Amino acid sequence: MAHDSHDSHEYIPEIAVDRNGKEHVVQGWQGDFEGAKLGFWLFMLTEVLMFGAMFMTLSYYFTLHHAEFIKASSELDRVLGGVNTVVLLISALTMGLGLLKMRSGDVKGAKLMIWATILLALIFLGVKALEWSNDYKEGIFLGLSTMQAGGGKSFGELLFFGMYFTMTGLHGFHIIIGIGLMLWLLKRINSGKVSPEHHILHFNIALYWDLVHLIWVFVFPYFYMTGAGGAIHG
Image (cartoon, rainbow, N blue to C red; front, side, top):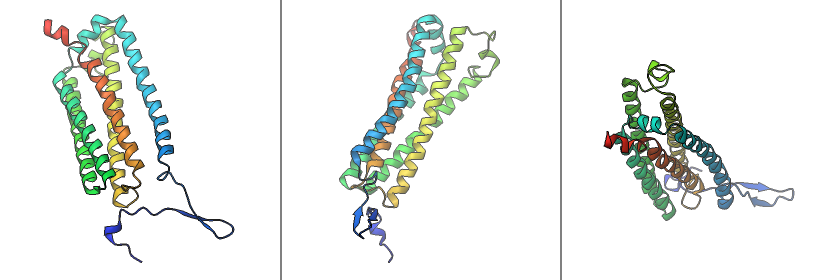
């Protein structure tokens, strides 16, 4: 029997039959809200540990190469970095609104907010691509002669830019993963596997996106604002 398109958001539980022929509803991850949250928080912990170690390394080398880090930071484009910060903060808002709309039963509104978040994520990547292109033109990019020993930059500056491209590149990779997750979420919403009654996947992806924008909130001042004072007084 064909299903009406209006019932596409209906969640169909999995049924298991025991030896006596009695049917039982299988408790899947869609129905185990607390378990799914706990599992995802454990995954998030590994992400925090990874980026936390990088920030600790950055802080340690900053104490050793204070002046060089300030000089290198002043060469970054704070305008583009600031634009991307605003873009990510707005995307966190649209993702949160999408989850609230899903919980309230507004599936269409939730999908609209997810698409808005994807658009903002693409804008972030576009701005970052423009910034890296400008860095390349100015001779600040990994692999260029100016970014190698004896190429005109001090060891501290090379450390700074190495960490900069590593951490912003890794963060950008997480943005791409987030876009893929949101597209997958939209597909599952359209198939009825994510609904207002069973929205744990939506919740976890929103949580992941919160981590992505939170990491950038630390990346921006660490890299872009460190040399702001020097640039103002220079």
